Image 1: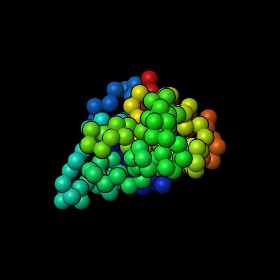
Image 2 (image 1 turned 45 degrees about the vertical axis):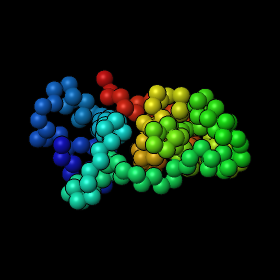
Image 3 (image 1 turned 180 degrees about the vertical axis):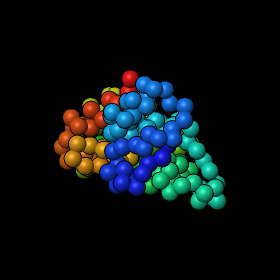
Image 4 (image 1 turned 30 degrees about the horizontal axis):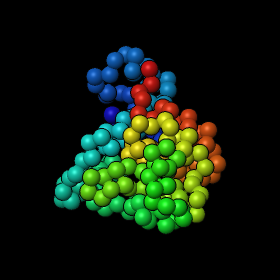
Length: 188
């Protein structure tokens, strides 16, 4: 799929000529709904990146086009990820409460066999305080790592392109919920 320079700047349309293997229905959808098609492709790449967690050696990573590098798992580099004790300290709650909040879908976290519970720190705004609307968004995902992939990657919204986590912080919960509902699902 090739994207022209002006389309890259707008970020909302695809160049349909030269696409091979698309059905006439898919081609028509792509022409009539370029933004939705872009969202579908973005969601599919995000889901694939989380599911397969490509672990390329550094030398191979340099060969990946720059635009695709965000989809490559950086291995053990977990910037901004807290363990249970660190999250409990920042929230000023017990470790038991951290586990309970994760199990209830109030706090985003996932279990890692090596390191125990992994919790993105950006969702914590202060003692006992989480990003508004986070629990509502988490209810839409079965996989917490996929939820984090959605929240942490830029997506097109009505007035801007931004990370859903930042849009939640700005108070636009409904916009993020709408985007989350279509994340990982191809339009039909």
